[in-house]
Image (cartoon, rainbow, N blue to C red; front, side, top):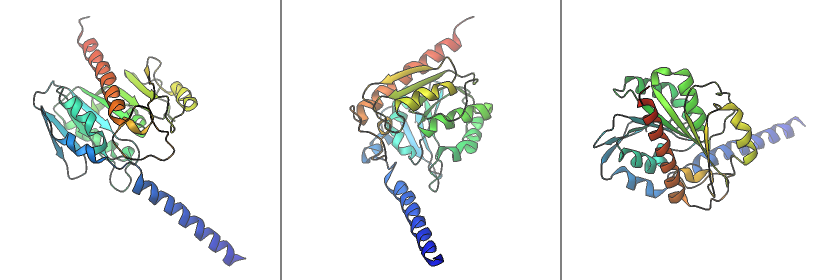
Length: 250
């Protein structure tokens, strides 16, 4: 009987290990098209030794943009968005949670130190999926990071940030299989009461970035190019509004 139990446990462990390995091998891999965004008019990009990316604008506007990736997703998958904002003058930093964990939470301490050391004093942030909660954790725990506003894209919210004094934009797609409407609505109680919500019709979870697969998601109706373009434009408008309001005379 003991031998049978040992065999059963061994089989279960192999299934768990295999499932985790499959997630890491299949999920979150950047699309081939991502590398085309590493070069473009009005900016240059650098891939750092730690896997992070830096997009430097030719004509800086004095503001910085932090992009925190979702779980298992690599920073390169956000190259479209990084290029879009770099062309508009933002210095864009995309930290990496590491090739072992590929979780944005693993990069928070180093990200806070990087932002604190930056000569730029005005940062905004985009957090996708788990990167959304990670963004709010960074703001809550590290005021030295100088993040003034945040856009959350399809971000699950299991922790309470309702008292966080931060302008927040929240984008959600009504075809999201990872964050269905019930979970989305329930998570609102954990966000600041003045959070601005935008529903992107036909959007799913995966196509807010450029990666090839995500288990349990639904097929989006927009495609990644259109969905990212909508998210970029809505977020750009939000950040511009925050910049205007912060510089308006009293």
